[in-house]
Figure 1 (tube, rainbow, N blue to C red):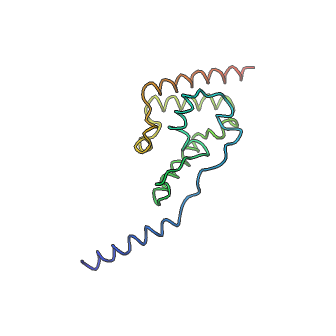
Figure 2 (cartoon, one colour):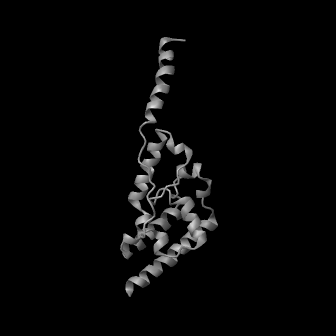
Figure 3 (cartoon, rainbow, N blue to C red):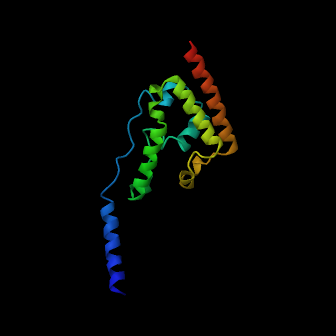
Length: 156
């Protein structure tokens, strides 16, 4: 074994162990009264779709798995969560004005219809997040109905 190979075999595991000391802050806040589920009646089928395909990255309550504790994977996942919440955070749904809610729902519909959401990288690991045609139709139908409900309430 060469000196360089021996050095790498010793150095690489040490670096991996040291990296484990640097973990991002977990996205595990308690659900607030502004959460989507507290602000509207979401049908059970849609609730399940949202839980499996959306809430880990688009709420303040991520369901962490064992691999989320491994750096640098934890950093990569934290980056996606931060980006997702920056785009849309269902935990803050009640604080969004109705016009922006309608717009956000339309963006969700477009992203889901185009197959852009949930992300392919998320679907690789989370099989429940792979939406079939029926689930997509159910989600899109709920979105359209909910948009109408929001618009009706805003007109009052």
